[in-house]
Image 1 (cartoon, rainbow, N blue to C red):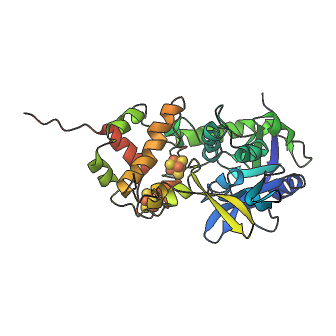
Image 2: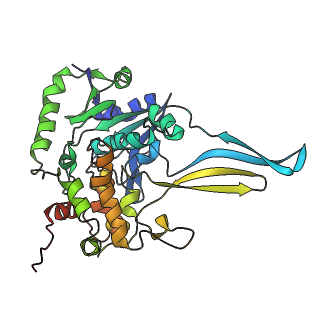
Length: 353
Ligand code: SF4
Ligand code: SF4
């Protein structure tokens, strides 16, 4: 059985402080009205009551990151030639993310299939991913936007985590999920946890039992393809959308980016920044043609990608972890669950004649 330790709530900051001596530690805290993952600061309160407003995506996949520094110079042998020297800027050091939720952390496994596949590996993503540990908080309550259980997960799913932390009386029960997680459980601040194991199992069971019956999404990939060319369907479900992009920026599984070069004289840097498929400019081509010209086309891509195209390419895995952030944060009330269920229920009208 995996080793378990008990951490008193009053010792949480001290423990994270210990871990921060050798790692960059991120924890959820308020910044303005939002709870975000920020570098651990013992002076700031750690917020663990509910899932953070933004997932910890940027800890492994920063919103903006430098990939390469480059410099142009004249070839001294032939002054008509320009030489370019480029140097990769690889992330250094180890990091620990405390307080992500099971849905958030499982989201990285969907990134992994794209950024660390056999065909191609993104060295920047891999450098952070390999050196980041996750101490994940099991949920002891859910919100009405949560639907992790629709997508083959649960509020205590340890997938992708190194330690699963379950809230129990007066603190957290810490269960090692990986060898790396076990190696983080050596502090003298931690006491034996076996006596809390039953209470933790009860918390996990109660929250799982509180969830409604999940619908069967097995037909989603096929049914979304059936409505692919039905623009009326997509116009109807996207009618309220404002194209603000909040849903993509807050999504733990949206991984699209854009590349820009920032230059100053003969020097420059290549920068990668998140991009979002709900923006009209995302697919705008240099000719002026846009293959996704309306918000109906763009929402079709977002939903289709997560519930149809990605599963088709990745062993049926849905690339939505059911965190519900896109629903909670959408200013127009667009609900991805309703769209998927509507597509599954859709039957084309048969005209006689
Ligand atoms: S958050 Fe809502 S309004 Fe904004 S782009 Fe997404 S679906 Fe549209
Ligand atoms: S699509 Fe919505 S519910 Fe699914 S992972 Fe992204 S933000 Fe969460």
